[in-house]
Amino acid sequence: MIPLYFSVTLSFKRFLKPSMEIKEISDPLRFPDYFGVRKLFRVKDLFDARVHYGHKDGTLDPNMKPYIFGSRLGHLIFDLDKTAEMLQDALNFVAHIAYRGGIILFVSHFPQHTLIVENAAKQAGEYAHAREWDFHIFTNSEKVYNGVTRLPDLVILLSTLNPQMQEHTAVKDAAKMCIPTIGIVDTNSNPNLITYPVPGNDDSSAAIQLYCNLFRDAILLGKSKKPVVAM
Image (cartoon, rainbow, N blue to C red; front, side, top):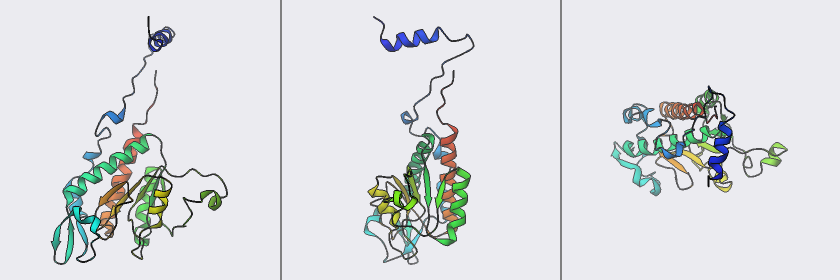
C-alpha cells in the first residue's frame, strides 16, 4: 500500500509540465551557520572598534564576571573570544528571525547613537526606537496605539541601560511579554533577563556602529534566503 503522502505527490507530478520541477527547500535549522554570519567579522574587528573596553574597576556587575579578561589601567577588559562567540549566536538568531519574516526592533536611549541606530534599522528594512521609552509600549500597546498592534518578534538593545545608568525599561517589558531580546551588556550591566547577551562596550560610537552594521547585515542575509516555493 502506497502511503498517502507519496500517493498525493505522484498524482500531483502527473499535472506538471516537463519543464517544471519541484524544488526542495532546505531547513536552515539543520545547519549551525546556515546564513554564514560567522564570516561577518573577526575578533580583530571587535578590538579595532574598542569593544573590549569596559567601565572602571569597582563598577562590575557580579553577573558579568565570566566575560571579563582582566583589568588594565583601572579599566575592565572584556574577553573578546567569548564576546565573539556570543555575538555569532546572536547574529544567527537575528538571521533566523528575518528569514521567517519576523519584526525586529532596534532600541537605544542614547542621543549620540540615535542616527547610527535609525540608519541601520532603515537599511535593514526594520524598525527603531531611539527616543525616550514609554513604559506601556509593550505591556499596554492597545491603549497606547488605540488598537490591536503586533509586537516585535525580536528586540535588539544597543545598551541595556538608560542614560541614568538604570536598567532600560524595555528589558523587563520584553521579558513580561515573552519577546526575545539581544542586548549589548557592558561591565556594569545585568545580563540575566536578556535572551542573547553580548558582552561588550556600549558607549563607544565605533562599537555601536559595528554592532549595528553586523545586525543589519545578518537581517539582510536572512531576508535574502527567505523560503520560496518554486515549481
